[in-house]
Amino acid sequence: MRLQKNDWVKDLVEKQCVDFICIRDDKELFNVKAFFADENIIQTAPGYDVKERDWLKHIDSKNAYFVDKLSPLAGPEGTDGGATIRYLTEHQIQQQKEKSRSAISINTINGGAVIGDFNSVTFNNGYGLDTVKELITSKPETDQAELDKLVTAVEMLIDANMPVSKGSLSKFSDLLAKHSDIAIAISSTLGSWIFGK
Image 1 (cartoon, rainbow, N blue to C red):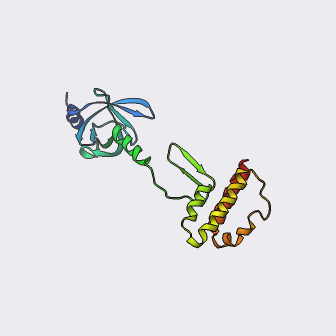
Image 2 (image 1 turned 90 degrees about the vertical axis):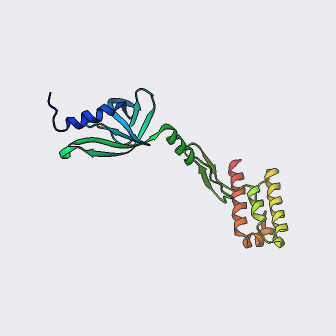
Image 3 (image 1 turned 30 degrees about the vertical axis):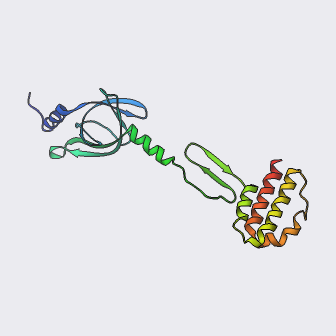
């Protein structure tokens, strides 16, 4: 039997090939003849509709390879020459996921914030008195004693479950005007306590 123009390319390539199954959207679609051409490279024989983001599962070893990048190859006179596929192994994909989940260290978050990764989220919708105390350590020493008294007064309000009335913290007004970040933190702490009752 005489081979057609591009049949000889397909025949030559297929002699080097092993069998894979093309998987798309978790469905096994069709068998593919291909071979490992280089590290992280698979070359398919002509005539297979493999697409990027497909998986090629090696039938013998059961190893699966993610099609990361696909480059069509031209055969003689512009015919289909198969494709060169850059792949990622399941292990490489797992490593990439772990890198994307790696922790980011944040010193202090003042105010509301959302912290998380792709799997979990922590909401911080205010300050706590520990945060206020940390802020105080960055203030001039001359103000720290009065700011500590302010925190003690707020702690007493919260611990005794006392109502916050107008003027409860008025003796600290000049101090709070001088340190607006402390005023915001105290307001947020009290707001969280009031609405959390």
